[in-house]
Length: 271
Image 1 (spheres, one colour):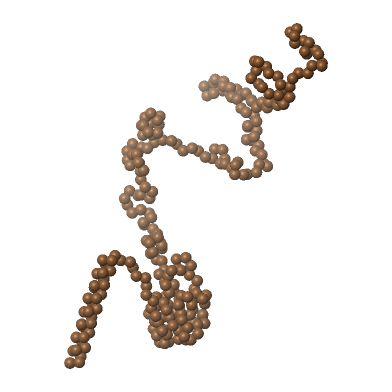
Image 2 (cartoon, one colour; image 1 turned 90 degrees about the vertical axis):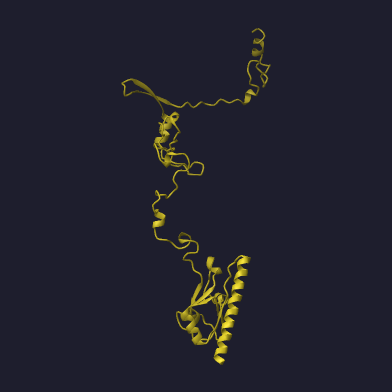
């Protein structure tokens, strides 16, 4: 104490800014230390009686209850504070396996049956083997009724539309010219479909038609009007080389047979 008193009473001697106390682990500048007020959470003690009649102590947080009771109205919703309301989501029950899970022997799966066994169980829509609902309802177009079931196979154009398009004498009617006239504008799947001429309406000019198919009424009207009809070939279905060879041999055989029948008929007529 005799050595410390002269240092504290002498005003000319200033303490060093860095103090290293041997018994403290702190090694920093004391001038930078700031005191902050500690906010204690107010707690409220309530005594309640249980169903057995014994008093119990209940500790409630007044700040938290006040915040829940009166939420801030100026809170802006953002992606970082979005969430379900408290109590609106309930975690699913985790079913155990066996007696040790504490949920009974069957753990909520029942005693017997396919649903109580391990594995995927019953698939969706299965009705025990009877005709399921998705097969009892009327069949739809497209994939629901089978691949390419009910889908259009041609781009149909009627004669009345061709007449209204203003084609001149001797012009060609095909997919390209109909697109240029703005009569058709196929898109999606219809872009690759061929053209078919239908017989609704009349045609007053002679034109050259190039299409994959013609209806019976359209063919009669166009031939009566003196139009030139060209049937475009379709896409051939791919077959194995061995099958193609057999088809070629069959065509050659029937062609020879047809030619022989024609020559014999001509000889019988000449005789």
